[in-house]
Amino acid sequence: MKTTLDRFGRIVIPKAIRKDLGIKAGRELSVEQHGEAILVRPVQEAQAITVKEGILVYRGTIEGDITKAVEAHRAERLRRLSRRIAR
Image (cartoon, rainbow, N blue to C red; front, top):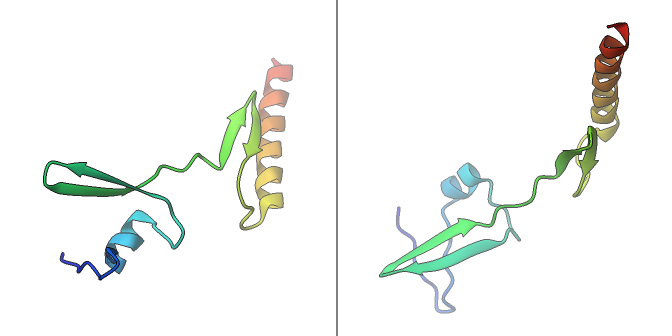
């Protein structure tokens, strides 16, 4: 694929590549020089949801129905706990 450098030094990343990599406006990119090549790649974002001491911890912007996600996780934790107690 080819693209053109504009007079301000900007390039347009083709839509198919942006879509494939999940790159949206405002996304931070890393630009590195390797000899005569330029490597542009998205900066890895921290995971929005992690598990800390068995509890879901969310860091980021809420999208979708967070209540259902919390309820499903809570139900799974209760199911595991009830299995431990039954033993």
